[in-house]
Image (cartoon, rainbow, N blue to C red; front, side, top):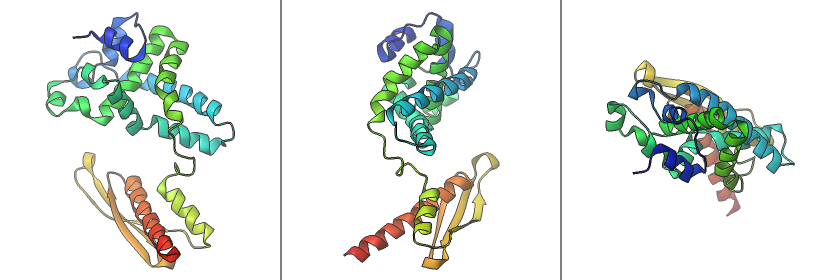
Length: 231
């Protein structure tokens, strides 16, 4: 079985000089001892800086808002979890017994956090240039696969712009109910476009997520109506 150092060299082409940094980056707090939360904080900043430079260089005609959406798409928790899975980061993690039993090595949030911690460790071990090279190796190939800036707008923004383009009033959002424990709540939100007679309800783990989901349902309904009118 490969050591963590051998895995790191094979996956990212980097030789870590301080094994303790690498070990900390790969250790979840559930395992006890030195863990990766502080390195995650540092790695998040390094990652955002490098990816900001990448999109700035790649998309010369994009404005600030578009650049922000490109960066956000690349460094989202979902996107980072995909990158972590591709390099088999989960197999290298040190987890507590509870997390191991519940499949924590596959949990997206744990994978994303560990990847950021790894970037933080490489920054401390080899400096900004070393961390930048590793991040570019992972993210440059993803630049060509990014959706357009317009497609990356969140559903609430797209719905607002769609209604404004039609000269219609903005949608209204209201929380219909909340359920679950304080640390694990579920929100039900209603989105209404009274001018079109549209009203939907969607759920999410936060009010914002529920509103976004409801806005997407309205957008889907508008798209279906538009396609029907074209037939």
